[in-house]
Image (cartoon, rainbow, N blue to C red):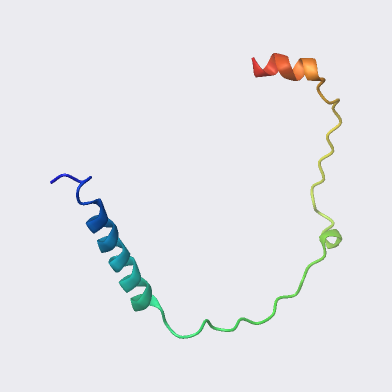
Length: 67
């Protein structure tokens, strides 16, 4: 079987399978979830903070790294 000759048939068959699967697995409307409470970013005292103190590379140094 030459796959290149039958590519359109394979595509249509895959499309039919995907469409049938989406209709078969589609239930009713999505359940409504209770609203969640938003947490502010500053509320967690145990949050890890990382500070990077390094100088930026110059254009010549970047060129050396690229190879």
